[in-house]
Image 1 (cartoon, rainbow, N blue to C red):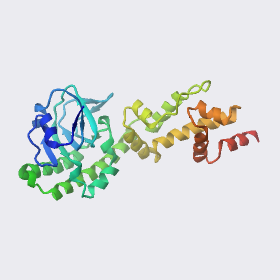
Image 2 (image 1 turned 60 degrees about the vertical axis):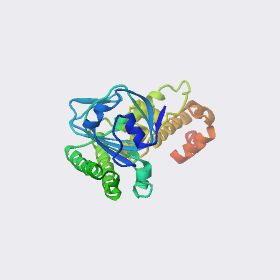
Image 3 (image 1 turned 180 degrees about the vertical axis):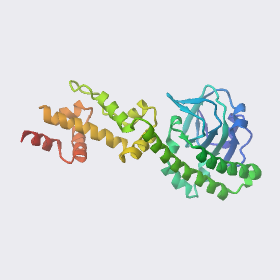
Image 4 (image 1 turned 45 degrees about the vertical axis):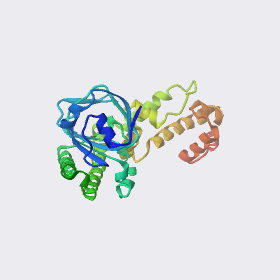
Length: 298
């Protein structure tokens, strides 16, 4: 697998001219995409990338979900992402790529670690309102022309200030998107509960494991980070907390309705370590499994 740590080498692979600046580059999508390789094996890109994609026609599929794309969307990726493509889709907008060294001495370096959307998958794109798209387009345009006009002499402080505003707005826009989806769709918490009910639908035999955040996210066609942010916006809880609350509730039922030992119940519910199960149970329910059983025997 090809690994790109150098912007010039990455641009060459994409049939683009040299980057406008040694540590960053900005491209107009409709001008850059036609020259891209029509397909690509997996490559690892060790840069940050923010893409503003706009002026679509029709709907676009991401993962197994379909979205209306009348308005623009944003995608974020962080160093280490592995990408590939079999066919190109053409769109308008901007792509801003920057090397991690660009922000090492800037406060943005600390903020980027907090912006979890850099770890989201493609189907967790930020879908903007017309007003949001207008704001982000203006900011991208300012970055692009600063780089285009001054290239390697571009004012890094100006660009980083604009980048900081883009990232801050993106965080706010994602919060709006979480709220919108919670209001417009079936509760994400309900979807998680349905998944867990199916997983534990037969108490006559043990399950192989306790569902993980990743397994549920995969079932819902979301990235684990995006799922957790979505459920936190809806319930104030984390995904793992939702899982643990459900599993310990099932454990309480078994404690009160069967003569199974605590260790057998742990194994039955997918835990490989009975002491860990007991510790988790007390943390979530406030009492130990033994105390719950004793209450039932009173």
